Every structure is written in structure tokens, then in C-alpha cells.
Length: 97
Length: 158
Image (tube, rainbow over all chains, first blue to last red; front, side, top):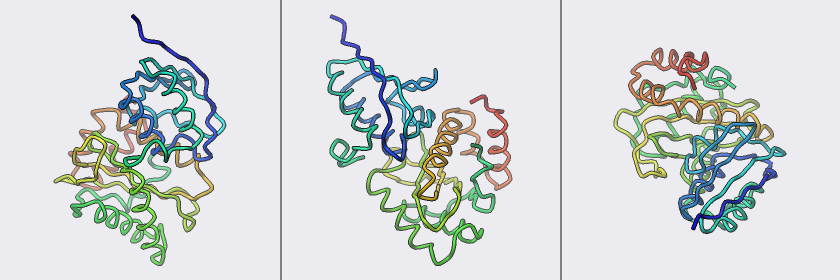
């Protein structure tokens, strides 16, 4: 059976934008859940397991990201990702945020 | 944003002496201090701010690269330093590997966009294997400056 694929457009509300710590948190989230996450901004795509690719998107506060998540925990991953983009990192990324 | 917009030429260190994380940060901040980009009175405060940021999670993002950084009210524009380590530094990186290339950034607290654009530039260029390899092999300030200039001119095809 194919794995569920969820797509959503998420608004970045963290005043600092998608900075290095957020990028690391997203990459660790993808690895932890074995999820395939693709982030897109303005036609440019980033694989969420690659911190450099995520930071290459240079996403500022108020901008949106198109997010596609596949894997058995896709809904949970998407929800956590939305929290990260709102700047809520600590509860999910300890101890290695 | 280009490297020329934020990397201080006088703070390019082709042969980092430090062998640990704190030493690396101190050596790079000291270089910015010597270059007159930050006040000597702010040296310790900036070092501590960067170390505190590292406590939240290493900026050693893998591939032998680290981007230690902080916001600090003593600077009114984004400034950066570059260092290359010959022996590699244990920076508690995500992939557990030693770090050879360092980009240290200090930005004003009210300019998150500049910081993101600098991260974007560094990330985009470091994604190019050739740029990374050449940078690791660079032996002089001039070598590194030429590579940064070539990257700014899109000569690595990033």
C-alpha cells in the first residue's frame, strides 16, 4: 500500500524566519520519522533532510512554504513542522536542537 | 547577498590554529576585533553569545561545515569571518564529522532578513562540491578571497 502524501501551504510566522536552528530541527524531524519532506518556495525545492538546501530557500517571516510530506506519520510530521515555522522549536528538538 | 557584502577580508583565516569549538569561535571573533569591525570591549560578550547559541544546538551542519553565529546589539550591519582548519575541529556536528570550514556571522538584532540572506548565500555555495573542496584546499587569504569572489560571480554554477 502506498504511503500517504500530505500537502499544505504553511505561513512562516517566526520573526527570525527559517534560520539555521529551524533548518536543523526540520532535518532531524524528517530523519526521526523516516519521512520524505519537500519544501518549496517560488519554484525552488529543498529536501528536508538537507540543512543546506533548507537554508538556501532563505524564507523570511510572512512568507509561505509549500510543504509535501509522505510517510506513515505524515500528519504528525506536518503538524510539528507548522510549529517549527511558528518558532516553536524547544519542545521538539531537545537535546540536539 | 554576496560574500563581499558581509565577509571581512581582514577576518579571513586560512590556517585556523584552534583545535576546539570555543577556541575556534574566539579566534574568529578576535580576527573581526583586530579588523576593527567590532569593539574590543564587546569581544567577550559576543563570544559568550555565540557559545550560548551553540548550546541550543551545534551549527556544525555536516559536510565539514559550521556556521557559528549570533545577533548582537553592538553591530549595526552584518559582518562575517571565514576560517579553514587543516586538522579539523570537533564541533559536535550533526553528522559527527570534524569541521574544516567555518563561516562566523554577527548580525544586528533587528535585521533577521540580512542574516537569512547570508545563510542562503553560504548554503547555496557550500552545496557546490567544487567550491567546498577548493575552499578546504586554500592556503592563503588571497586564495580564499579569489574563491569568494568567484562564487559571487556565479563561477561555480550554484
